[in-house]
Amino acid sequence: MHIRFDHSPFVASVTELLEELSALGFFHHGLLIGSWPMTVYAEHFTLPYGLATNDIDFAVAGVVKMPEAPRETIPELMQRLGYTPLPDYTGIETFIQGEFEVEFLTHRRGGGGPPAVTVKPWQVSAQPLPFIDLLFIRPAKVSIAEFTITIPSPEALMIHKLIIAQRRTGSDKENKKSKDLYQCEVLNQVAREEEVQRILAEYPMSKDVRKAIETSCKEAELTVPGGLPWLASKG
Amino acid sequence: MQAIRHEKKKDDSVFSMLDSERSRCERVVERLKSELEKLPKGSLGQRKVKSGGKEYLYLCIRFRKGDKVVFEHLSPKQADELGPMFERKKKLKKDLSINQVRLHTLKKLLEKR
Image (cartoon, rainbow over the protein chains, first blue to last red):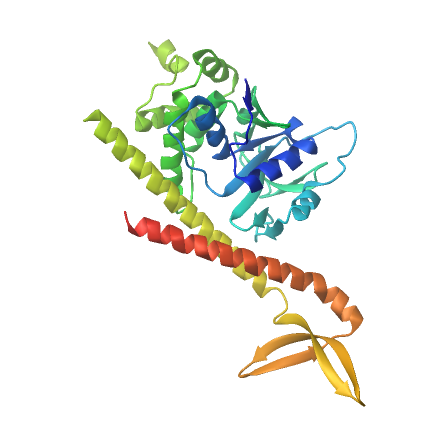
């Protein structure tokens, strides 16, 4: 999927950040994730979704081999753009600029591991989380005037949110779950059946993960295009 | 009936999102405050001192101690070391103020629920 915009669907400061990251080559190995891809899909498909939070999340591939080192590391770029690094007690570093908070996430295999890892060659601290790799399955390109970014496809984003909605933790989990499920409802309107089924077939899922998807579908009162294949095979 | 239920669900989702944003904003405010506590107190400034008919400018840290404003002179080396810290402090204070305003706005919006 390749989406093109003549004008940026994002506010100016977010557009500037995306353009700079694009120029650095970040989107060859990274994605814009979280709520912001919803802004793209809402604009492109005219979907009833007009909200974006002020945390900007990026997924970064854990092992990156690049022909040459980038001219600037991500912390250097962020500071040049006026973002202040702000570590928390676990070592996770976010970048703050006014109302905006930027965070980098990477895929975590298995159940444990450190709360933050440094991803080379960007030299950026990223929080490892499960299922981030799902978002990298056939991502969508978004060209905004002179630059291009990469975001998860609507199908991958929807399946990811169906899973994580049931795995939210912390005092804010109900609000986040509600947001996840609402985004799923919106994305389900444009999700392509072939791609949904392809992802469900190729992405390894445990029984618990399948159960999480089923529960989310039930709670959001939605049926994914083509249905859940493991339910069909049960008869 | 279905349409009303859908609208209700949508409203709930909007409020959930605002509430979630409020929580995130509260966390940012707390982290900014905690980071500011780690930085030197006061602000970086200059102090004019007249002596022998001449006026000298000294770099100093200004801070309040009770009712008084205290000036602590700095050597150029100390000023070089502390300069970036005060720059960071200035930026963090600005970010804190912006996030406190946003938090206040979000709380007001959520009161209307």
